[in-house]
Amino acid sequence: MTKLKIAIQKSGRLNDDSVRLLKDCGIDLKNGVNKLKTEADNFPMEVYFLRDDDIPQYVEDGVADIGIVGENVVYEKNKDIGIIEHLGFGKCRLSIAVSRTEQYTGIAYLDNKRIATTYPVIVQKFLDENNINAEIHEISGSVEIAPGIGLADAIVDLVSSGSTLFMNGLKEVETVLRSEAVLVHTSGLSAEKKQILDKFLFRIRAVKKARNNKYILLNAPNDRLQQIISLLPGMKSPTVLPLAEEGWSSVHSVLSENEFWDIIEKLKDAGAQGILVIPIEKMIL
Ligand code: ATP
Ligand code: MG
Image: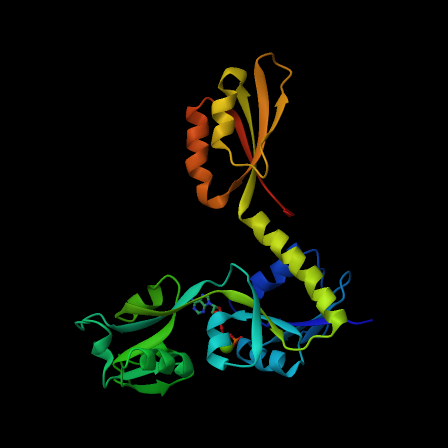
């Protein structure tokens, strides 16, 4: 039987969320004895656990058909692979940082400076686009200590909260790239594998939508019903059911995470009571 081969990070920041995504898509992995490779019990899929740096190459070569990896790695490795879907986790930015004591005046500051990074390809492209001449020092880790030990004047590194930079006496001065985990694919998948990929994508999109939305139930006095309904977007329009108690209705709808708190407050002000909010597992529109 044909199986779709997916490469995910073996351990590290993307591992948990990648495994969780498969699980939420209803794909159960066998508890493999072999930690390099496992397969799904209930979906035609084989899972390879790899270093994230190696995933683009494996996908280009077709050793894996698809993979989950940060956009930062995709752009740095520059392989012949395509991005199919943004996955909404592993969010970070690739930023330029300099010592907190430096006066940073703008990108021109970097002219003729030394920049330490593990992302030489992306950094060179950024410098070229901004007409900056700087010397890139490629190092493989602990980039944040480079300015302190006199190896570089600036660094380009991944940042999420900024606390690592802060602890090393650095300040973030420029964003080179915003990144999140993406699903990538090899070129030239067989028709059979494309079919499996389409099924997988359908599930991923249902899971992503569900994660961004909440199911909401509330009780409304009938004389306020119209006002309350007008506050709710709903997939089509909200469901309204009569309560056993005369003069009251139960209203059901779906709210997106972004507008959630805003709308809840307005609903309360409009007279809604007993508001229940429930996570949605899958959402198919
Ligand atoms: P591997 O052993 O697989 O090579 P790694 O040490 O290169 O792992 P991780 O630190 O686990 O990689 O990060 C994996 C990916 O997680 C990054 O490439 C990036 O896309 C994403 N990421 C999200 N937030 C951060 C962050 N604050 N710092 C670093 N990476 C982050
Ligand atoms: Mg890596």
